[in-house]
Every structure is written in structure tokens, then in C-alpha cells.
Amino acid sequence: AKTAGDAETLQSEAQNLQKEVHDLQKVLEDVRKELEEVRASAEEALKEAEEQEKEADEWKKASEDAGARAEALQNEVHDLQKDMEEVQNEVDERNKEVEVLLKVVDAARKDA
Image (cartoon, rainbow, N blue to C red; front, side, top):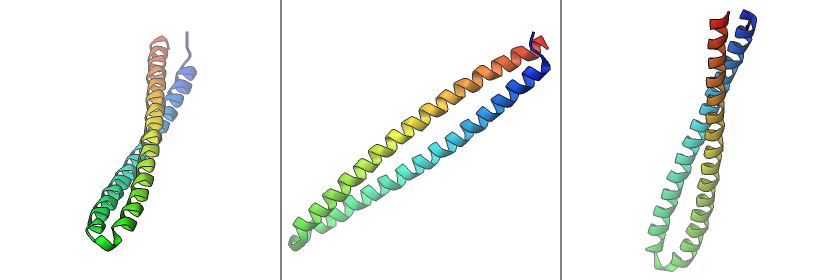
């Protein structure tokens, strides 16, 4: 049979994991905000490119610059999406650990 001390230790572990999950969710939210900012920047860069292309004299240079910027921003969006997936996987994993620990705590309380 589990002791009350074991239950307290497990509850403490569960609380620590819940805090870790909360921290990871904050990181995920920050990454999402950053992704939105990058997407907005990409849209802005594309608008600028369209306006610059209307000016015949600078058409070639503008399109080359905008293309390079758009490509760099697309790469950044791709990297941020990968970061988001990694953080989401970590959050999911921690949530599973918390669920298991809470079940163990519950069982330990019933045995106490």
C-alpha cells in the first residue's frame, strides 16, 4: 500500500509537471505570435513588391529584392512551424505524464 508521503511526493511531481506544461504552452503561444508577425511581414513584403513592380525603371531590382525577402520569410515561417510542432509535441507529452501521475496520486489516496 502507498503511504501518504508517497502521495504527497507524486502530487508534488504532478504539480511540477503541470507548471512545466504551462511554461511550454506559454512558449508555444510566443512562437505562434512570432509566426503571425512573420506572416504579416511576408504579406507586407509582397505588397511592397507589387507596388515597386509598377515602376518600370526599378522593376528588375525590386522584384529580385522582394523575391529574396519573400524566400527568406518563407524559410523563417517554415522554421517557426517546425518549432511550434516540437513545442506542441512536448506539451502533449507532458500532459500525458501529468494525467498518469494524477491517476497514481488518486490511487494512492484511495489506498492511504
